[in-house]
Amino acid sequence: MAKGRHPNRSHFSSNLMRKILISAMTALGLAACATAATERKQELLGEIHIKGNEPFPIVMLETEAHSSWELVGVPLDQARSLTGHQVKVQGTVIRAPGPGVWLPSVRVDQMSIGQR
Image (cartoon, rainbow, N blue to C red):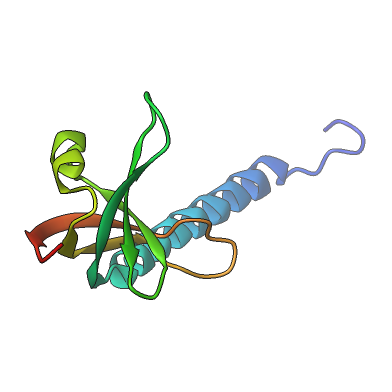
């Protein structure tokens, strides 16, 4: 046996790697469950606006309380035809408002036109 080498070192390393791998897989599984559990539906009322320039325009909704939301999944042509109109949007929150969030966003499932 070489001087300074522990006879069970390879066994120790494989056990350590196994424990690390199991811990990482458990953490990933818990994170996936937590993400699915935090998805929530949102209904918003407001006016459609398009901000920014090509090639990166952003379809937005400004509520009566003057909060802005990015509307994900609304085709740009449809948004242009609705600019300035009041709409009701139903969808799933992608990025919720809160500290450090510049622009909350919602993935639009359904949108209906209100009055101008």
